Image (tube, rainbow, N blue to C red; front, side, top):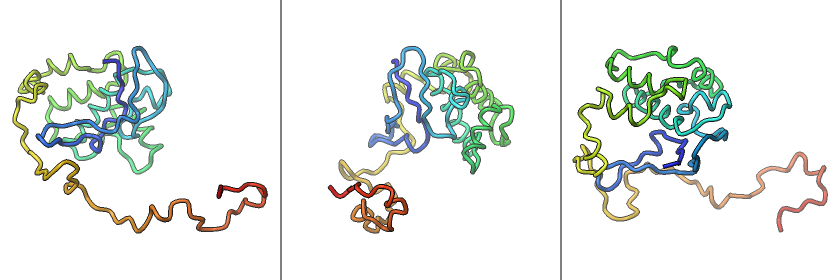
Length: 197
């Protein structure tokens, strides 16, 4: 459809009231009919062409599908590290450096490797996924029509029901926004600057 999503990750996939998934957070999405160069996305899921600062197209999203599928089966993204620069190094090394848990089947590994292909010209896309044996049980038309019963349907009391989300204490953060908590160590360099207006 000429749109690159560029931020596929578990946090951006929500369950709708009917149990089917919905993508959220289109902040990095852009229309793109050829290629683009903007570096954006979440480090664990970005494609090598972004790491290498090359032009890219919608195949960066298929790379993210591969990273997501690996994470769904292994409980951690394929190139994950506590250091963001190391994540980029791991992505640049490519899938030959991924540690594969024994629980990932040969078919799953094959499809993930094709999705994580460092070369976007040979990376799997939708057509290849339709025909891959890993997905042979999926009826893509019924899935698109939401005619397959989801395995889990969330209990939702009303529109805006956020009971499924964790609560985090705010500690009056909004009330403190913009408050000066310490003197500006460089304030003397800007004697006429007034940010209170």
